[in-house]
Image (tube, rainbow, N blue to C red; front, side, top):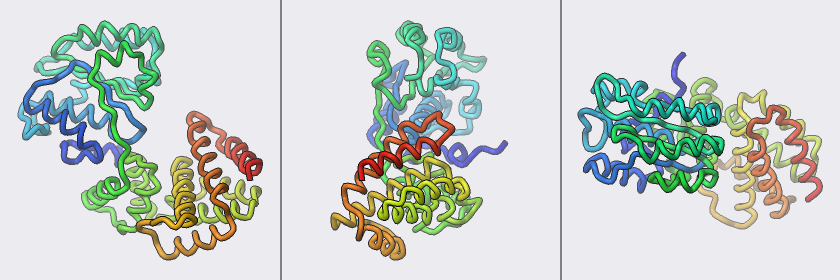
Length: 345
């Protein structure tokens, strides 16, 4: 199976990492001078902003036999055999004490050609309390050749006893302009024909999630229609129905979202973006880059809708997104959200 676009274009040089300049500066300097290195690192922050990417890049550069200005050469045996050097575990799947005992056995092996051994625990906050306790001693007494990487979206759930044993880096949310620039680079390298305006639309509807933006770009490369990717007309219809307090129409609109080749996260992120634009228009704030057609539609919508209604809708969509993980029946959750909207109208 071919790699998906986010995996295919994952940064392999520090210069390709977007939105994390301070963290990149520190990590790259550690590679260059081989000082300040730790046997355990925590990368925290929201989804899709580069936590596992930084862990992989740092480990590859650290393990490279011929690094160039702090970057991995991508040509030596260690770079080419990264999958044997860096063990990646999804802690949401393997979260028990026996799983951690199994993976800690790996820290003692370097392989036939030496070098570092890396262990990456993604979504590490999902580990059970006994599993965290089992991890304490390996982190503290890890061999010099072993480096641990703990990646999490919820650092508050990681025990302090674990955090104090690691160098910790909190990653920033990625700005729209940085996502746009990355989309521009990727679209050229992958020969994807897409206009700057459509790249802006993807960037601004990605909820500062670069991975999500790349998935949307991948869909665009197959479909070639930004409205089908972002369900733009559906969103405008949603806002019109919200203005008219027509909750039956809103629910019918939601039922159509999967017929527009989009996914639930993209659909809700696009709605949040549209609501924020309407609110800015109501308040007379700058909109940035936006097409004349959409600006006219927004102006038609906000004439008969209050600021409080827009804010209320935005808040309920954010709450819906937080609850939707792992739920298969999106429609029922959305219906409950609509009832709240009516109740707070």
